[in-house]
Length: 266
Image: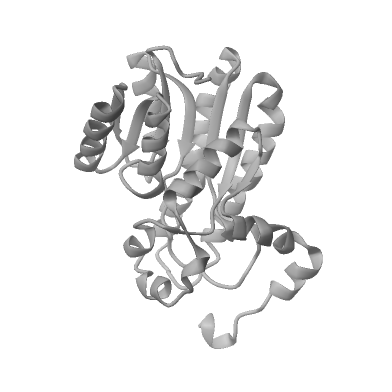
């Protein structure tokens, strides 16, 4: 049964103009959810909204907002409240690869990354989950990553930021699950979207084995199924679900803690 049947109930998706965000929009629209699409690129949001309205006869609203900005959460919340849109599904999907914590010396870029990847998610959860609890129904998906599940040397930003989303989602779910609200951290592995092209990581992608990659539709189906089942952490893809318990093993984590060579941190 689709719980979002009232005219003023919506699924809100951030980073909805491309990648997993657009796929969430398509699958939730196909399930007859009204949508609020949030992103910076109005032209791409408008094109997606037109597609979904025509295909599924749903209401599809747009909010152009930059979640890099500290005031974006308040802007989104204010727009929803003034328009009478009740958010019953929240998908915090917006994200970037981000700067290297040690090599990129411009601190403002680090702060912008933290704002987008962690603070904006906490902000929207803070604003929207209490109303879900009051109504006795809600679904929240915070898009994290398999990178959150095991520490490794490298940029020291992306994995830790996603690990915060996993911890946040687990505690939120423990707090509100008995009140009809499910919160899940989605942890996909390598996924075919435009993320790697945007991040300048296509050489890495092209050099990797194809069997490590999953399509976006598979990841989103796993996420929706998992949050409906009340799972606080949803690891997407059969391969990664098999690997995740190994990653969480104390002995495996010791083996994977390979320190970078001195020249790699110079």
